[in-house]
Length: 416
Image 1 (cartoon, rainbow, N blue to C red):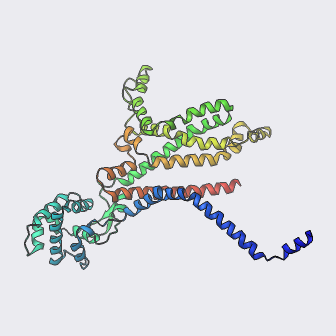
Image 2: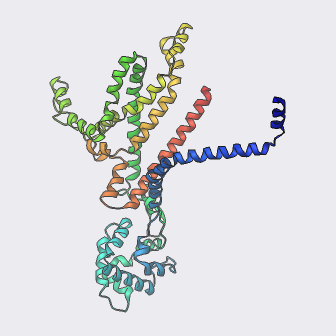
Image 3: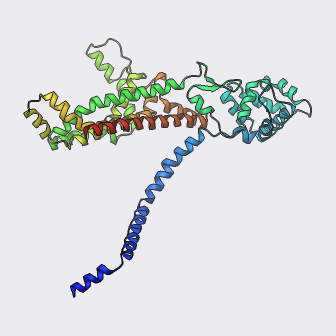
């Protein structure tokens, strides 16, 4: 009977079995997809969509196109040489009249003022006076109202406004701008600040990362080698800052480092200084406060890797004649590379976006790029500039992460 069943099973076609297997696998994939769908939607809504919107806003600006439609249409036929003709000025006058009645002249002036500082009042004043213009020689009348309308660089600006996409914000974020004849040139020294800010942001982030590594690596090694009871107690003290907000920790350093704070009083009591030291509102205070906040972020990945390293490796190296330092450097330290890389990368990326700490304990020359993003978002309401600065920071971070992964991959291959 068993032999008959086996023969019947072997003679059965394979196609139905494969079809059943495919259907089962398909159901499992669909079930898994449904389970991860809430998380996927959460990531798309709260992470991917805002980043995509920021990247889009850095190159999209249809202010002039929507508020000055007649002028933009008329400028499509202008060759960019000299000043436009009478028909373009007539369209400009019509748009200015409408902007005054619709109360949109200020928005037009604000957009023009981004590229030509000091022109916002001239635009709003021209809109008010243009509402009283009669049919006639609009070109002469508008230039008489304000010499702004006789500047070739203004018309080049308006010509660029015929497109709803612009590179102005990205160019300004790297200290470049359009010249009067439409060429891309370096910004004047009084406006060229952002490259220095980006370099300052990178510099502070590198120093904070190095400081957290110098402090965190020995501490992680100590925690990994101590008995479990003692290590757990010390670990609570390490992660204690995570239970306090960044604002509270930053304000604590303000209290400690102020001119008549605890640290200065202690230094003077020990006769280490005769006058209060400048410990706050400078680069030193910024780096110390950021290092304190980021220290657990660097330490915890290193500690988690060190806990998996068997002490028998170092003992074996010592038994073969290696000295303490040589055994540590050649045997133990390379095994911690993954934790060191992960901790330093996390700290570095988080440090790039710091805003509260530099704003509270740093001086004017210690503000990082996040400060300017917040400034353009909250005070000037210049979403294009804020998005451009954020986009460049994001791209730079991704490039650095890509380079890190490349080097980390090469090191893993060598170690393998």
